[in-house]
Length: 299
Image (cartoon, rainbow, N blue to C red; front, side, top):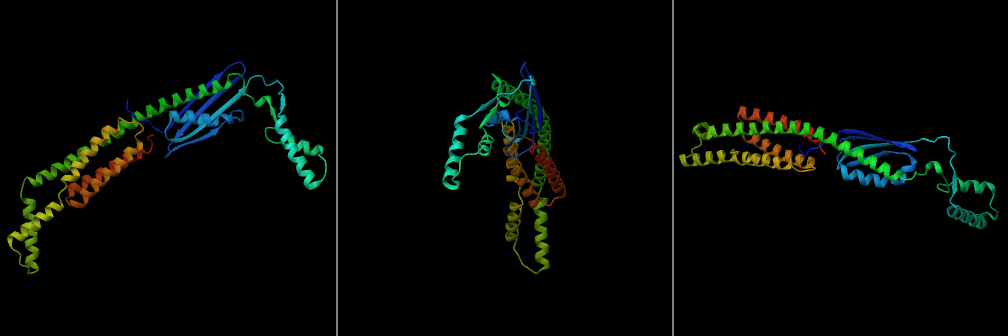
């Protein structure tokens, strides 16, 4: 199994006891960073930061939709109401001070009703957690994340196999270009061909050059068109790929490596006008683009 995890995955878990039933669903898709969107009951709002911390321990990047559903069993039970006396009295004091300073009137029934409608002044038992419910929802979230990671790894294996096969094609293309270049260097045809072209041009322009000058110019041209360094760097990049594939997370590192590989092939294309080499570079670019598309889905 590789260290590759796909950013596309889905998982669902449920928990049920005599008091309530909980369902956690997580959907994950591509994203540059870790982006979490919650759809959870009000009773869990205070736990959201804790949920985010737990999720970040399992997932490094991707857009996640986290949906939590909560169903109480005893629906016929009348919810009890609790007055937050301290908060109520704080609001009341502000009202009294305001009315005294600006309106010079007493607190009315309407004022009291208005205060009672303020957030958290009155809480209902229907939005309170059952005993041990916080532990249950956290354990259920972790269980769902574990399932999500299993699916991400399964999808990641398929991505990894495809990426490896495409890198093998890239290496074969590099080896083919190297073979073509070695064949040129094994003969003097390329050198003599350039020399002959320079002689023809100088002759047509009535320019006189001695043999040594021509050899020097041809040597400079050959040196500028040499792609040995690019081929060596490509081999080095392929070796780096093998190391990166062992790491986690690896998506961004692979993206950077693809840029470097693409740069080497572009340089080769700019130096070598040979039709076969140009065709190989076009094929390499196509494989790079397919790898780049796959990398967009790697965590």
